[in-house]
Length: 118
Image (cartoon, rainbow, N blue to C red):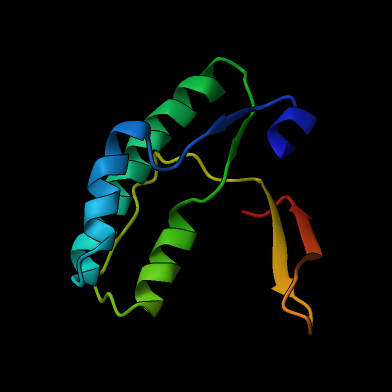
């Protein structure tokens, strides 16, 4: 919906050919190996993102490097990663918080929208 509203293309951050590997890796306990797989998927997605941006097409992604690194660090990964300068950098962040009410039903919570980050 966000991509359509912004007249952008939605680029999956885990490309389709990674999905079988992702399912297998998610069954494992090695957080560093899992992080490396997700980083590989993101670098592959970054190439597609660059192609769209060079063509003047805006891009929306559901996740990106900061989320990957933060999530895996929270899971216990301790790899040091320095991202290359050539990566496309998000200029707008939009996130939604989903929560449950007292009855356990899901509801859409708050939204955060920031322009001009980095």
